[in-house]
Length: 190
Image (cartoon, rainbow, N blue to C red):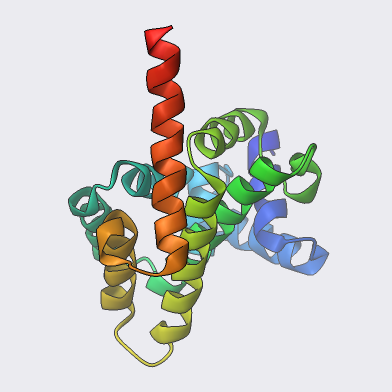
């Protein structure tokens, strides 16, 4: 078994040896060669490219692209609650990277993914990450009683349209974004 496949199984099993063996057994039942995409299909999770794509949509405020990605995943029979949970976990990794010295000890990912996560975390403000985590949590709670796809789509439209949020926290996020842009403009002028 390749290292990246073993790491993916370990991450999905979240420390549960029986779960890891069960996932591996299911993968072997589907194919004799275990691959990352085969493991993701077996576990019913999306690829990391989709997760990075959704986070990029939040950063660029591109709700149309986020809705296209969600539609693609929905059309491929991906579970919307599981997707919401995966986005939340991805955001948690970004939060840990922003707030800890050695966050990689708290989650298992290949080195190339860690580099992408670090770059992604550095390009977002902590307030923005925490807000996105809160929106995903609220969406996950609502999904139990409503149309899961619609709830996830609404969450991403909300995340990609910060002007719709008038809470004090939203105002702080806007100020943080303005300050970040001011620093970049100041550096360019110098």
